[in-house]
Length: 160
Image (spheres, rainbow, N blue to C red):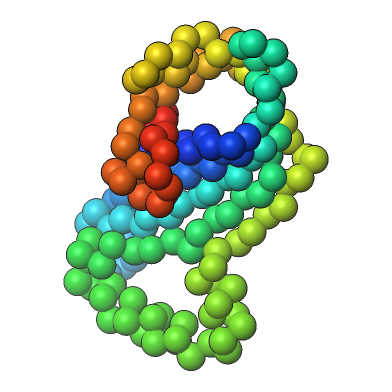
């Protein structure tokens, strides 16, 4: 995970986890040797409903998860794979529109009523929020300006 953003506003939260996969690739069948640092980036967005359970206790109920379609950082593709990558892109563009749209919009997973968690606020000031779940594991969040997070909201948010 390269970073995680959390936006908490009006009783709802949106968590975006940015993931980097296959940071390095080593393929060496008998006739081909490929090595490099190909990167695949993806994002998982979790929408939750947050309610106040007491002065320091809150409950988070998961509403929906979205796995965005992964993207390949083209500059990181080894030369030996660039032709195959171009062919795959051309093939993907020829898919029927409903399938192409479903892939482009990501995989939505409804989670209403499936998962929830309780947490206690251990510390809060203008810059830092520390919460602990029921097991006692802390999460330390630092406040960011909304424009730097890429979540397109006007309120500040916290980053884990």
